[in-house]
Image 1: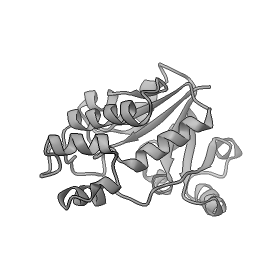
Image 2 (image 1 turned 135 degrees about the vertical axis):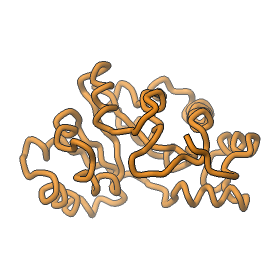
Image 3 (image 1 turned 60 degrees about the horizontal axis):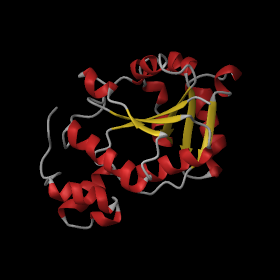
Length: 207
């Protein structure tokens, strides 16, 4: 069936991420779903907590909120790489493990795909699994691809649009909520306990 790659900073790992993973599992399309925390995203200045803490939050969420399901796997390729996290490099690494890869992304990332490094080569190598806020926007997303990427049918058939119950939250919102003690609305209790125990998100960490 192949594998799914779900990358991000996960800074912190929140309920929106959990919802995506649960719905990817429900699709029944993948042998494994790899969660790939970034080390140094090209378009972000830095992370707010260390790679170690971000990975620990993911591990806790998988254990406590996802029944420790073996379909979910954390991969440290980008963290161990110690340089910019270009998706094309990550995909080439995973092709050694499985030739059938679906790259999971939200609408915002998809609508900026033409700005990614080697984006046409990337689409050659993977299928795109695009998480939609509503089913009403398929035509607009299709039009974007044709006008900014390619109208080649060979590329278009590699895109799968999936309705996702996306929670309208951002990592910035959650970090602010930790300071005013309302984060319980955005992260699981087990992750929140880890955050408070380790006094995280009190300052930005340069990696």
